Length: 332
Image (cartoon, rainbow, N blue to C red; front, side):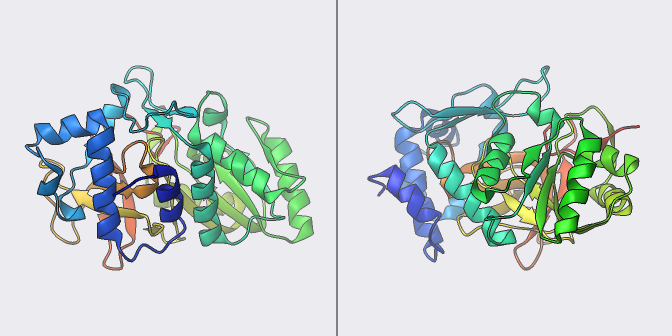
């Protein structure tokens, strides 16, 4: 039973969750009692009592598309922030009603440092033009928070000032100390086309985010192009959604790992209440227990595959689904 969602959620992101199933059932109970949209969704599926759900594998996943049309919110207090997705104007944007920005900050800093080590004293750069040009981006809020935590004097965002970014990188490379560059896919592609740089001390983090305006290429092709032009010491990807508080980061092979409170499963494309056979692809479903005030159980429109060690890869989006910020679309 969740008596204090604030303390519950902060404890969840600070533990290794050996009792994952129990914690999921607690989150389901809270959602049933406090999230009208999720409860109505469950009722529509024939779940009329919380006692019908005895395992996290039985918990239904809310389709992410409902964030476009419904206020998916499970708190009695007003939200501190409303983040919006980068969907096209034709399809509408998702809205994520965030009760606690402090929780979001704890989550993204914890996940980042568990993947890359301490932020303190390491420069953080952002090449995120499509996100900087609109309001209420959770990605921009996250990168700003990482910059604040690092405290480095050369931190900064770059809109279209590619020459200035190249000069900042050259300055950082002279210091021979690790630094981070977050980049939206099309901007990194253009940057790598224009400049020939050596970046052995860089951890380059590709975030996706193409908004449907460019020709599709594979992630492998994108990363090969970036490596050929920029030669980063490390090139990885970030997987997140505006509807979630948590993120997953890949290694250089393109396989993503999740924090203890975030789990991935798959659903059949044509039957979302069934799972594909092991090794087969399917719709990515996410349990994000940090999302207690929104919805911790979300079915995305992204296609993925889970590997035997629990890591997963993102294969793209399902045809005819809304254009999402994580698509891999590059210029002709």
